[in-house]
Amino acid sequence: MDIEGKNRRLVVVSNRLPVKLNHSEGVWEGKPGSGGLVTALSPLLRHRGGLWVGWPGNREPAPLGAIRNLLGPLSEEWGFRLTPVILSEKDVDSHYYGFSNAILWPLFHGLQSRCCFENRFYRSFISVNDKFAKVLAKHTAPNDFIWIHDYQLIPLGERLSRLRLNRSMGFFLHIPFPSPDIFFKLPWREEILSAMMSYKLIGFQTPRDRRHFSECLRQLDRSTRQRGHGRIVELHSMGKRVLAGALPIGIDFREFSDMSKGPESVERMEHIKEELGNRFLFLGVDRLDYTKGLPNKLRAFELMLRRTPSLRGKVVLYQIVIPSREEILEYKELKTEIELLVSRINGEFATLDWTPVVYRYRPMERNDLVSLYSASDAIVVTSVQDGMNLVCKEYCASHWDNRGTVILSEFAGAARQFKDGALLINPYSDEQTADAMEKVFSMDENEKRHRMSKLRRIVKRQDIFWWTDKILKASYGTGLEDWPYRELPSITGIQQRN
Image (cartoon, rainbow, N blue to C red; front, side, top):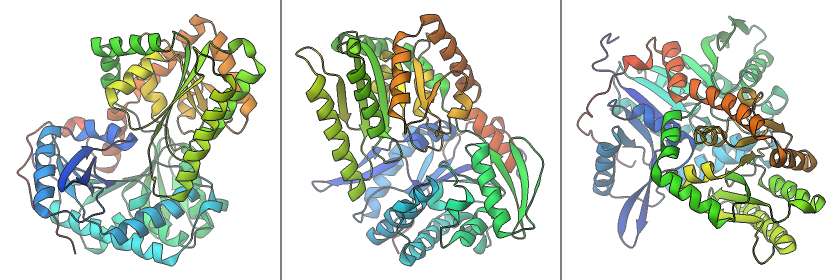
């Protein structure tokens, strides 16, 4: 190992790069990506000479020169090298929309009735991971640490091992891991568990997710045993050994906190509050997905207005829905259901000077989002199942004055960390969610500040750098401080389309 760290790099691998290539009117453009993974991991790689490998999001074939011209300047601007894996339209349909999101996504969220178990999807799943493996073989060196992220790339470590690459590799699963009674419905359960056992370290968001994983191993291999206790344990199963960590992902607390104090953010915050008549503001920020419980939230808000007329005209639900997987019929139907609920609530309760639900269906710039966080009196998260949920952490970091309250689903991974400061609810109970909203509206200001100060301490202490440090020390033997800031190396070649 390169003890001085001069030649090693942190290599992040995810299904998508933090940029999406778009072709419009004959011109290729690169737009920054969105989502929790991009927000969380970008600060780690920035100016450390690292590498981010992933699919650039284009379904239409892009000329090699166009890719270089777009990713090169973005790499220089962001302080880490962007290396694309080129996928065909068939790859995207069968791997991303097929095995990843028509099988693993619903299954791992406990919604097996939504799964579409097709062998062709699994074949594509392996084929695409082989393409990622070839790119990594070309662009990484033995001293690099390859950090693979999420369910779309579970087999990647095993596929890299088949190429006989000498690399240190870790994997982190950002979504929940299901209990054995759900997981064992997967026809390829043994292959998936074997692939997950191929890393030096595999990380989960919560102890429950890790426990489910070890229980699945025990059902498949009765000789499975665990050594140690605490955040990181050692599992022996299927003739392999892996370190398994329960390590909740964090955010860049300082970035959100500092941004919320800036004069531009404060000005936008005041404008939002004034525009909404300085009413009590409930905020929702969710990606369009059936796991986020958006209809549940809207029905609970409707129930609160119906049963407590005195709140009409005094409260607003400002709901941001981030577009996602719009090509999929289920998501189109969900969007329609959400918009019908919004129309129903506003149609029944709105007055000339008050709209109870403000609905925005669009991506949000970071600075606008921070201003909304700061302007709102409570964030409402009603996920029916969630790996972590970083929105509630971003919300807390943006309330430097200890204002604001968190209403959080007990089925979000963050509930374990937030149990002493948030109001935990069962999102399947409209009454319970409506009760929590009413409680927040009438809550004493001192109690609000006490709760928020607790949550901010947790988010600040267990931030994205704490999380990364724990994983690097367990899987590579060095902490984040051992990966110094450095200049980007010269751009390397880009994989050609097969």
